[in-house]
Amino acid sequence: MTSKQTLIDVKAPLLEALNLQRASFHNEGEVAYETRIDRINRCIALLVDHQQEICEAVNKDFGCRSRHVTLMTDIFTSVSTLKSARKNLKKWMKPEKRRAPVPMNIFGAKSSIKYQPKGVIGVMTPWNVPVNMIFSPLADIIAAGNRAMIKPSEFTPETAAVMKKLFAKYFEDSEIYIATGGPEVGAAFSSLPLDHIIFTGATSIGKLVMKAAAENLTPVTLELGGKSPLVVSESIAIAEAAEKIITGKGMNSGQLCISPDYAFVPASHLEAFITTCKDTVEQQYPTLIDNPDFVALINQRHYHRIKSYIDDAREKGARIVELNPAGERWDDPGIHKIPLHLIIEPTDDMLCMQDEIFGPILNVKTYKKLDDCIQFINQRPRPLALYYFGNNKNEQEHLLNNTTSGGVSVNDIAMHYACDDLPFGGVGPSGMGNYHGFEGFKTFSHAKAVFKQGFVNLPKLVGTLPPYSNKVDKMMAGQIKK
Image 1 (cartoon, one colour):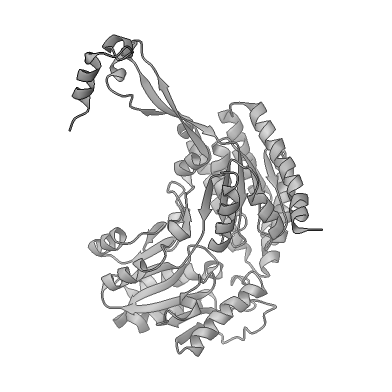
Image 2 (cartoon, helix red, strand yellow):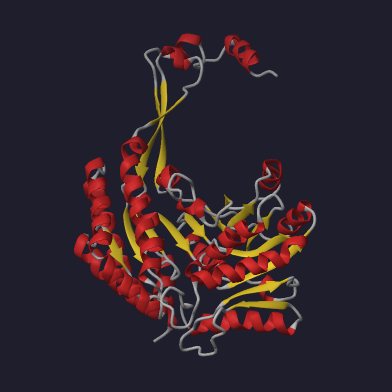
């Protein structure tokens, strides 16, 4: 069987599901507020009623992932986003008033934007936060009145299977459809003539998704990644900053797209920073290998990838600080756990400074002038997130005004993502478009411009209809001027 024939065979059931959803969408007509609320409520019920089953599935996929981590990063965040959409939906659905041009507005003309659902939205999700990455965009998609086809990551098959089963229980395939499978399903999925695709994952795969979507002129929202920087100011107690930073970096063992990749620390505070990082890990994770709170890497491939970064940095002369309080061995790839590591003063030729980490490594660079940090950041691809720890408002504004990133958190890690009223998205290589809140509602809506003429036939009144006369020339001369 040829690869082309395989793609056709894989694509056939996906096209069938798409046609089912599109026909159902058109037959429904205007999607009522009550219908949207009902779908949001069913999503909330799915999560609340089956949280234990979901946590167990995610734990199986990771090999070790605390249910508390899944409850916090996947289920709580999803329910919170869904509730936020439910609370604000009536306001979002109202037509948005705009100004009609002068002098038509004087005679009763009106302009507005009517937000309408696009139709069928494709959602392609990653493995790192496998439940939230379904429901976070889905909240906006449903609120906007759309249907959804979802392709979960093949790296979390247990979670994908549970999601498929639960969605079938709470929704008809004509509303929400789950497509499971490997890369061949992902390739077929991204080539569907959907009305919009949102993809979250690696930049390299995002390029392929965008290329496939372009064949159908399908608009895309890409949530990618990159190397997110962090700047620690001298204006904050170094222990306070280090504790928050290492806590944020330890979440999900660094397997988050907005996890900081490298931190700038004042040269005079480096040793104090390292000491607090050690103390924080010792308090939070006194042991690692058999500790259910310390999340494993998703699989052996990622274990070997992260280990190769550490080995490469060590071979090239970097100082490596292993945050391993009990001194445990972690050389068993079958367990695929790696302690948090600090790589001090990494050079640009090291793998850890070239690739996105997406794991338990934090690169630490020292600095003396803030502008040196800004120059370093701006010489690299624009990141998904940027972090500043400090209490100097002028310095903070200088950093924010002179760097470009998808989003920013000040004096904490990843909290801008947790704000449902803030748009979330990347810029350049870290992504395009955004979702969350009203911006997410608009992403998955068509902003239909509506103009309603007033009670006077203005062209006839002012004489701008053919046959044209000097009157038109005088009028245009009066308007077309500096």
